[in-house]
Image (cartoon, rainbow, N blue to C red; front, side, top):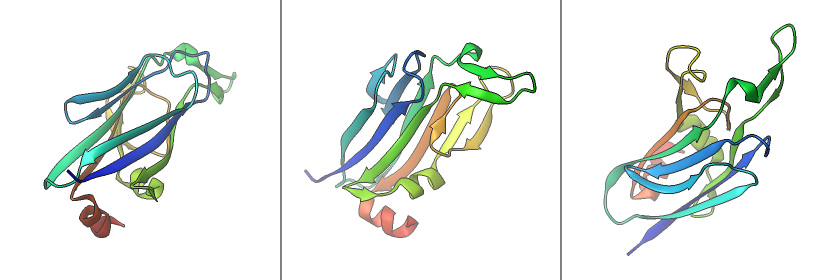
Length: 145
């Protein structure tokens, strides 16, 4: 079976805050960590032989309003976030493409209506970062890079 490796790092801005992460491919949970305390390198081999559409989801959990500190003017002076970086597919740097294709669905930690937002690499609200792609992956890369 031919596979391609998707890899990325997940890191926290504040190891004290119990921010959790769940990584899913379709309906399958590939990783669950209830408190990211240090950088995690996630690697997963995807079957590249079958043609199909896929959705990789990165779910942030555990964020509360106590994890964001603001000054008297409402400016954020400290915040707990998870950063997604070093995204590769078969060791090809696709970080920029990943950011362009991701949709970040969240509701500002239950303070506003749910929105679909652009993802810039840091997740600061409980929600789902969705990355859709298809296999064979090299064809998808050619069409999207």
